[in-house]
Length: 397
Image 1 (tube, rainbow, N blue to C red):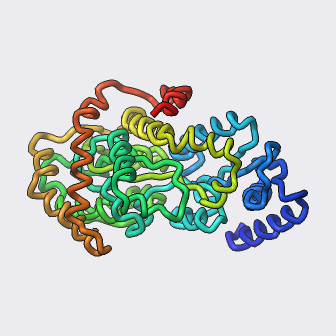
Image 2: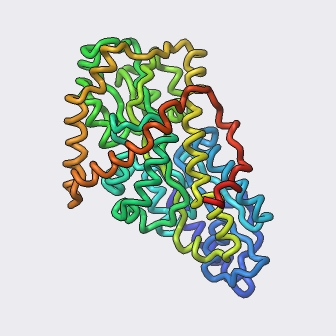
Image 3: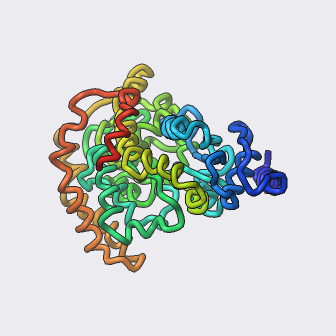
């Protein structure tokens, strides 16, 4: 269905739902009905929030229905729904089925949707300070470490938190590290980058890929499979979860297992929808989300991709390999990284931010977590190992 027609339909049904409601209370939602979902979500603002009210929230996501992103969202929110005894329910619209990747945050901001999961790479310049998480060579070695750094940035840098003023932030986290995967040509020496067209995710990684001697190509992840298959591009810097989401392990031949960068991800909720909830239901969202549980869960889940997605690669005949010392030293040399990092500082300056001071603060935060996460991949793990009952421990923090 055309999105404009769908949006009009939603609006009509929402109005009918409000007219039919008694005393402004939300009616019982049908979790499979988008129309009912929007009717209930929008009637929340007029609800007296009594103990019998129910609330259904429309959740949009650009990732596919079988992706890590969608599995994470549904697993987390199913826990919330269960703890609320069904008073909170969710209707899920993955794969850009309701709003495209670049439309999600605005849809939540204006109330067309209620909740979204997304990443900063789609919104260059909207969250410039947060894009530090995306910076190659910043010392972040994993999603778990990146998540800890990101949370500290939000707590300690007012300008970073201010980037999210239009939304109620349920969680911020880092995605898995992006390796460099190629078709046909195996990257073994620094000179092998020359002439390669490599897809990069967003403004900051683009700077790095170009600095390596390759040519960075901006491209939606949904187009990468075909572009690799047809030789339009020779490689990609896509994180492990995206490789799985779009089956990008199929067209590639080699995967250079290096920590290029992770990406800042987030769960947003519409401000008004959250504020309209009664205190007991807000407390459930807070318990699972703003306590830090959702963020830590995401870091663990995304890091687990390094193991099981690499297995999928090998099953498809992909050679997963580590760089030689020569190649590693080149990719992470001070000379190469200093130029990329200066470009990020200049990028911040362009927004009227003191780029050097902000960069220094972020790097200082990173330095605090180096020892804690030094051995994060020493033991193989899987997202299903995450203990959902551990949410109780977060209430004491």
